[in-house]
Length: 503
Ligand code: GAP
Image (cartoon, rainbow, N blue to C red):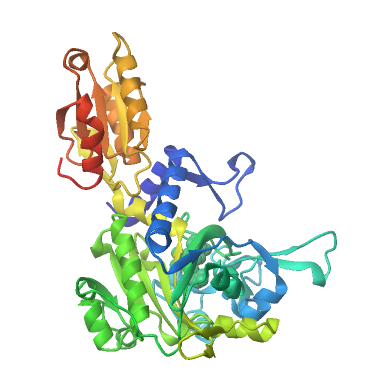
């Protein structure tokens, strides 16, 4: 299947089955805004919950927060976002259509522009005589366009009332660092994490929810003593994990990615510090746990010109999307950039008192940052399969139980003769512990197909034999194999299967 065709089919499935769709469609939607439907909401919540358990709930060294979305101009001045958080914008002199300049070049020249400076972008446009994609008019010079959404707080609309919707959740963690550290009594090294909305006025939102204007981030700022950046335990299994890697040096030398281990990356000093490697490994493991296939992931280091204004070293986990390798998640070394900037700007002491040395230090930070919509879309793209069964086209989402909206579905073969009653009884029993759906509409084949499309791993069918011998049929989505089990064993069998037992 062609890559574009695959993406079209994924989007079609997501809209048709009500996972996620353009927001407010009855009035014509604003580009870059989406609403989640029933199955999408269930899947999104699972990803959020899974992230929270993995990065916060199961650890003793991470505290959680939930910060405000709107914040004062002072925060974004200090963080550097007002001055630096921009993309290159280019406008047509004739029809005045505006484009993201690097995307326009990538579309026209079929090259990747990661890390290109504004000067390089303008040079490429001139040298290649690129013109407006809308009217073929001549293009202006590309300029930086700030991506933050501006608003006003209160009844006035003057400068002093100006505020911004946060373009990253991270700044609420930095500005609350001292408060959270003291109230949670955490000692270095420790993290502060949050899941919440972020907003970016993207010049060209594209590829469905890959780049939208309103999205959720799952972020952690991990604070470390500046002299203990390598004071971290990584177990041998994790150091030996294999991953496709493209370092900044390999990109300079125009090499292709190659498979290596984290031990090699650390020993060769490709990754600057042990804590940075640790959080890259955790991010990688988390995505593998969502069921994303190893071969579709790679680790790419940002080249110097591409680093965000706050970053000293960034590694992206990239996915091989139908439109090429692109960032799924970023793990940045933000050093003391943010705490220092807020300390200078707010004139508040954001240092940490080290009990051992009795010296105040400004912690250094590693930031694993994840986009919820990107994780959501990537899980679906990776799980999507379309195949022919006889002359029928079948769509299957091979979601694992960590992401599947329904873990099982319960059907009566027919509604009559007490089968529906029995099925509802079993459904009510299972739903106490398992994400479960009851369905009695349409033929049994159609019901299986519906659940395959939304990624339900197991279906249970109640038939005439059930009424005689208290057994039901359980069907495995991926192999389509079926077997009979006792109603009394139903929950324990399901639990075992959802935890990885063989069918
Ligand atoms: N605090 C660091 C930060 O915000 P980023 O690389 O700009 O870094 C982090 O964003 C993650 O947020 C990305 O890896 C991506 O998953 C997600 N993200 C960024 N912009 C997005 C957009 N316009 N739409 C959807 N997700 C986005």
